Image (cartoon, rainbow, N blue to C red; front, side, top):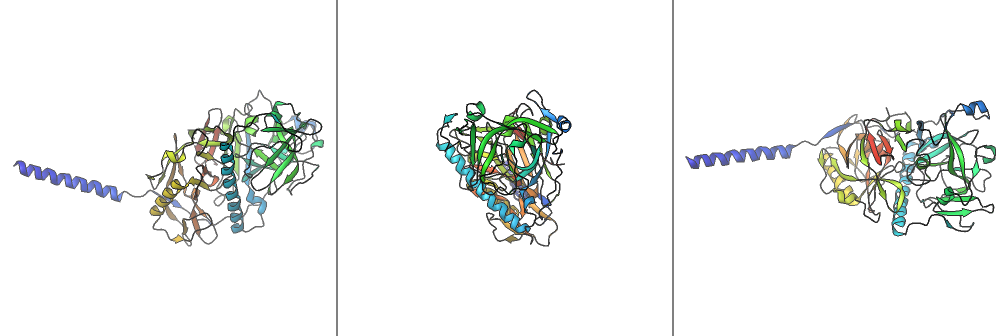
Length: 486
């Protein structure tokens, strides 16, 4: 009888194990729907200036002047650089975007590598007029721009916004060299609020090193990775944003500007450095801003940026901000892992994304990089997991930096594996359009991640699109709110 009970127990255990194994094997891959849309045509650039450009004191007085004791909110409309290339075909625009992207990623890696290898710069170190000052930045400009007023009365200009840059600058007359821009060159002599910065001032000393002209006024120089450069007077000026005036913003007034800045008049640096716009205006907007970048293949609605308390959505999930001890420009976060198809990818461990004490490695959030770069072991594991989950889709040849592409021609809906980024304290589930993107008008879609031999990973703007990405610098955190562009 005991033997019979023992056999029955063994049989029951075997059935239980078999059933458990069957469930484990047949556990379905989590999928979501992709509506394949081809590469979009470039949007038509149209913008109505928010305030008149006349010299009326009444009109100027109607603007809300931001003082150091006032906390306000400010809303901006953003557009992609493709708007400046309205006559190009979509394939050419995409190729140009990938070229800019590769250059930006490589120069970010170079900048971090140089910063980690050197000793911290000595603030306020003196040098001669010929060498002037150098910002220390080496990456190119960002992908999105807005329109804002410079000076008093405001002259409206297109300005690139970039979370990977610090110094604010604009082309100024007289020009020794000026590249072609859409608007007339800004003339500081026609602005009542323009003021040069003396060499001995704290603002001039905030630069990595200080340069002076013969009148003992501060000079600036910013060099970018593609060989572009802007050089001129370091000054303060008033900026106007849709009815809000922000006074005494330190900016470069560039008289010698060389390179390809795609029609914009200058750059509004949104990094974490001492001279970035968020740092300079920190108390005025409570050190908070956010942006939402739309999917240009699915919507004609413009992207947006908000400054102030209202910039932080209640629905956001947050992850702590980290700081690189050698470089304060970039926004570092802690990525713990990645899920594909509802399962954490094996081999993608927190150690692959950890920044060491010297400032090597880590993960940054960047608005000016398009394609997310993962350190190579993490990318290979993620890519292979995605290929398995998407094995029913027809493969297509590699395209540019993408090695996992699919032929989705003549398909109206497609099921693709889900992708989730696991940050510390924040699980960010990506829409299908944030990682399966069109690369031509023939139905070829590619997995929009790439590998890098660098230890530094970059979360790019394709993966951020549709989210309101909130930079709460007062709380030392970054948040992600889905459907934030609504």
